[in-house]
Length: 281
Image 1: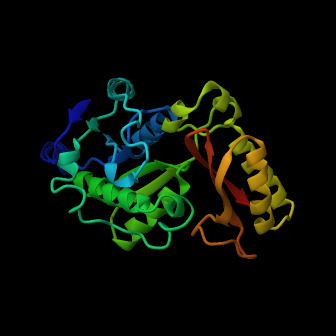
Image 2: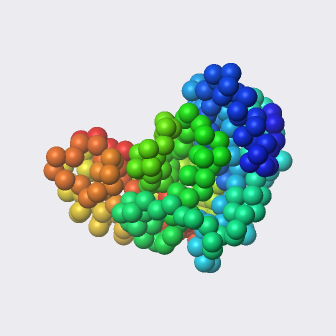
């Protein structure tokens, strides 16, 4: 596995593969890799002859008073896991390589509407930071395909819309959320949970499952959104939101919609957890 930190070297390496007619897959990450990330790498190997994994803790998507400095960084362990899987390139650029003129002067990519709701309403500017860095990574690597986890469902839709609107020739593949045995969605931020909070954390997924069952039984979405908030509080969470939306657009549910997604964000202690569950009705 090649460990590359500079864009010029990355492009030189990829140019040889592209000249040979090889298909290239990209898996963007912020490191602290878990089984969910590794599943993306393995799926990428089924999609392309060459796999590039990026590790970059993107400061542009962290707001004031968020956990940029505390975000878990486990580079050596990540590197070992990727090498064991047979990853071709680990691209781990420093911040000045990605933002050579600084973050304030950086040209930004914005996906309107999708970026301003749900997590975007709670974290202003977050999805501008996500879209900007992902667009830059796409231009650095120029992959044929890129893979993302569905746990960050809103992020996945933002990236799909960006790719469509900017006519980028990249296939975007979303993989189902990987979970612990009790249903907790794997996340790098799960490491923040205390032992006590970890014992309660699966309550977020259990609440989504309850909403899903009631939704399929015919209970109106708006009623379920309201009922889920006190249910989460009872389970020890501080809810941010629970929303039932169209899985294609994240628009409020219409009677004709059959593919839905239940999305939720809630704090457990100081840890913000997000999760979602797809529903067909």
